[in-house]
Length: 329
Image 1 (cartoon, rainbow, N blue to C red):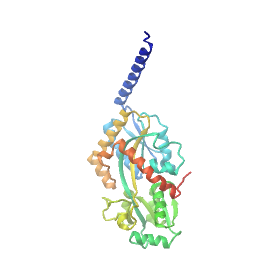
Image 2 (image 1 turned 135 degrees about the vertical axis):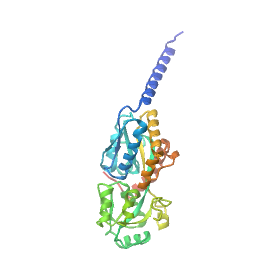
Image 3 (image 1 turned 135 degrees about the horizontal axis):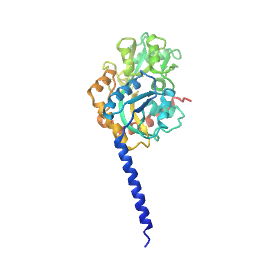
Image 4 (image 1 turned 90 degrees about the horizontal axis):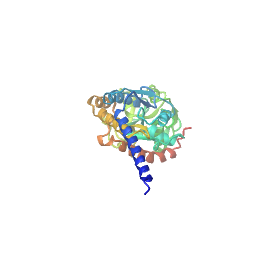
């Protein structure tokens, strides 16, 4: 009787078990050095601010510092590409958002597939957008604003934070559904666009609510509606788009944490637990609430929930982005 096939099978099984055991031990030891969290936007923006709040608290549960690296350009896609090429060891992560992990896959000719090269870790805080205009615009309601935009078709300027950014796509979609025509003015970020709106150098913008609201609260710009089904908890006096006369114009800038695709499950589990622990911290929740950020419920913070959200948003926004003709090269 020939025992060689059986011995070969035993050898292979033993080898696989050894590799799995060593991988498990490695994941249990993780992390043993600082972790780099790449943000595709400049310092001081809403996503960068959230990254720094998260990193500060996650250090406590992981036992290692998380270093924020701002890799800007092409609406965040350059920074995301860095993570796509990184070793799948849990030491290089992507803290991105709707723009970097949904819209860019349609607006840019990426060298990577957003759904194939990353492994979701956890969902992070989100916020809707606000339909805004400079203080001197002679319209007090959204319906009046749309009428004014139509009357001044082609002569009204709209500020965005770059090609493929949420303000760019929201503005193009707004023009499509309202039949208006605006002159798009691209900026290198959300901050300079908003500052020019405050200064009256541009007329219109759709910006992240948490980032724009301080200027709204101080009366420096006008807010006409929030792009959500329900009123924003940070500013309940601002009507929803449904209430203001633009039903169904929903758009939320949500965020998430991703790792390279082949990152071990044990490492993903540790990172996810750290995010959950961080988002449950009362001090963190207070800081995020002050910004107007909405923390997803515990059951929606899972890797599976983030993956499902990303897929659903790509399916929803892909055709819209193509229809309004946004394509950045």
